[in-house]
Structures are given as structure tokens and as C-alpha cells.
Length: 216
Image (cartoon, rainbow, N blue to C red; front, top):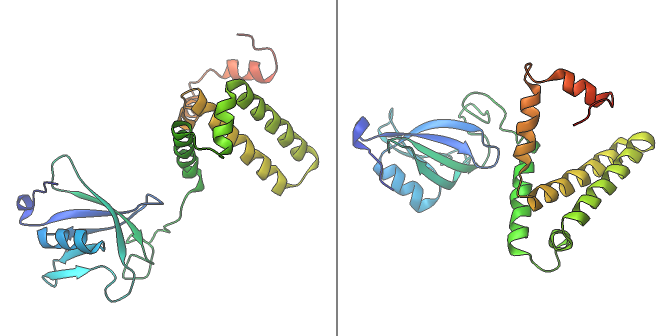
């Protein structure tokens, strides 16, 4: 990877991002030596502009930034460093240098789940329930979605919240399998919902459909 260290006097900014939560944790600076040490040790190392020396994040606190990947930007002078943080990142004890909580938003898992399901569709490993669904075809997958919807309705009317969440999870899983079968993504559904959230979206059409008077 070609990095232009000379553009800013031997240093390039390194944006540190949690590889799982996608949250930005801090900003540091690397020279070529710090970059090479990061690659070699798999622990993020910076150049301290105040102390004028290398420093590996966590060498005193134990809160290392374990390297996952490094990407260069289009101008080859800014690094995006994805990490697994071992504890708080900021020296003040907070998760990030902006005092934000580095929490994982579970909604992001839906994209990861579809990636996993798509891989199942590609590899079709034996013994996998997802493989079995793909082998049975679109009709059976769609039927399973319908079955899970019915079970969800039953739990919503006469069950518990815990069981309702369980059944809705089954719906989402089978729905994503159906989307994958049709070469679609869960993000396509999110984009449609985002479009409908726009105040300019056709509200009369939405109300007519809700009232049962909408016809295509």
C-alpha cells in the first residue's frame, strides 16, 4: 500500500474505527515507522507529536487496539484503521475520545445475517437448514414466511412479549432467505421504508391500502 507520508511532513492522520460497532474511536497520527510497527505487531502504534516518539496504544493501560485492517484514502494520505479495542480508547476512561458509548446497534446484524445467508446460498453446505430451504425453492420459502407470520399473530394476541420477539425473529430470518432467493437485500426493504417516510410520499395511496380500498 502506497502512503504519502511526505505531504504533511512525514505524518498521516489515522482514523480509528471499531470493526464491529463501526463507531469512530479516536484520531491519531502515524509516520512510516509507526505504520510498519502496527503491521508487524497487529497493535496500533502512533507517533506522539508531543513526546516525539512512537507509542503503542495500550502499552501502559492494557487497552490495546488490535488491528483488523488498514485502508488508504483516495489521496493516499489518510488511513482508516479498523480495530478490536481492548477496553476504553480515551485516556480519560471513555469508550471514545468524544465521550460516546461504543455500543453495537443490533440492527446492523441484519446485513451481516444476509451476508451469511447469501454465503449459504453460494456454498450450499450439507446439513444446513438454510441450504435445505434454498433447495426446496421459492414456494416453500414463501410458505415458511407465511407460517411464521401466523405464529407471530397468535403470540401477539394471546402470548408473551418474549415469545412474540422469538416469532418475529423467525419471520425476519425466513424473510431474508426469501429476499436472498429473489436476489434482493434487506437494505432494499429499508430503502423502500425510507422512501415512504418522506413527507412527499403518496399518503392517499397508503391510507387506501390500510383501509382495504386500494387496488393495483
